[in-house]
Length: 107
Image (cartoon, rainbow, N blue to C red):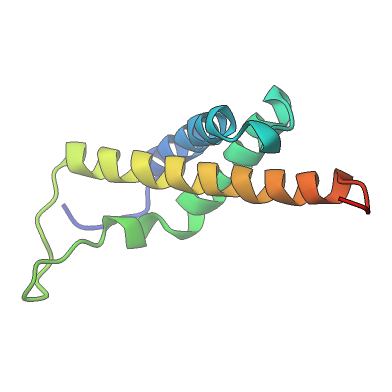
């Protein structure tokens, strides 16, 4: 399967971006900022990842530099993990920034 840009991969990354953001929020209690906030950040991050990083995620090579053959299932799994990772990372960044902005100056 050649790495191609598809709407389906964009949707996969956007949805798993939301799931990744909520998973990160579950783990990092101090950086939570609400269900809607997590969903919005995960959706935006996953959609941007699906739009810009979709072909890069699909490019997998062997040790010799040859492109690995990829099935549709492999492609879906790669896209899902990429979306979840970017969604979780974005939620942690936004949560950290929000947490630091709301801290009192003396702490």
